[in-house]
Structure formats: C-alpha cells, structure tokens
Length: 230
Image (tube, rainbow, N blue to C red; front, side, top):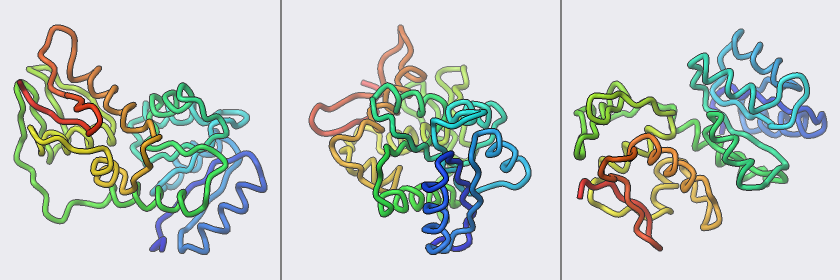
C-alpha cells in the first residue's frame, strides 16, 4: 500500500488523470493531479512529492521539458514518464531528459503500481550501508557521498545511473544477468523486450568508458553485464 507517500500526477487527459488518481488513492497514496508541466513544476516547488508520474505530451510545458527543468534545478524526485509514443527514440529521449523509468501507454495498473513501488524503495535509506569507497581500475565510487571519479575527473550521474554503476562495481568481475539487475535496480523485471537497461548501460559507457581509456563495462552476450579492469 501507499503508506502515505505523495504522488504527483501530471497528465492532460482528464479521464486518465482522474481514474489514475482514484486508483492511487485507493492504494493508500496521497495524490495531487495537474494537467500540464507548468503546474507540475509549480506544485513541486510548493510541496515536494515522493514520485512524479509525468506524461510526455502536454500543453504549456511538455513532460520532457518539465523533466529537464527539474534536473537542472538539482531536483532528484523520482520520475516515471508515461506516453503513448513507444518508439525506442522516444524512450531514450525521456531517459536522456532525466527520467528514472518509462512506461508506454496503454499500461496495466498493476504494472504502474509495481514501478511506483520500485521507485519508492530506491529512495529509502539503506539500513546497512556499505559506505567504503569502491574502485575498479581508475574508477572510484564513494557510495556514502554518491560521487564518482574517473581518474581525477568527477563524473556526474543521475540517481539511476549511480545505482546501476554501484551495483556493477560492488560485483566487480561477476557477470550479472539482466533479470537480476532489473530486480535490484528497478525492483521489477520488465522482461527480455525492455530496453531500459541497455539505454542506461549506454549512458554509463559514454561517461565512464571515454575514448582512449580501457573499457570497464563489458557486455557478456546472452547473459548480462559486468565491470572489470581487464
């Protein structure tokens, strides 16, 4: 159940917005629902939310723009983007804008609830934190401060990027299959057709495995991913 967590819904279709709000309230969430990105930004500045459910195609300020504005303001509220546009390029655009997850319409309520629970779990403090710095090659990860360096250069990562990199580095040399990574990072296995993981691995490679450096993030075809220095 929702346990009083506040969900902000930004959706311009009234029927979808109202039915989703009713369903979330029945699940025990506190819900605020708005009809465009500008109202979402205003609402978040007035009162923080635990998760933002953000439609992409909206009037005044669209979802992608609202997401970029929030991230530029260093607002790390978990964002679940929803949209009727299902092309891979659209999904990548949403994740590039700073979203934590992406759900195509039409979606089953059970799946949306599972993704919300996963995002909320990731915001909870670790009861047994392992805060000692981790390193692989010239990559250093300060888990307590949630900071990353490649050599002497600090690398800025989103919450999901950091969580994924930390998981891989903690298991350096071990190949993690895709289902395990989905369960550990998103709390839900989105199945073999999901592109979310591949997209985030691509993000990390562009930031960590820069040109001229030895690659640390490796794909084991048909299995999953691993981090190793050789």
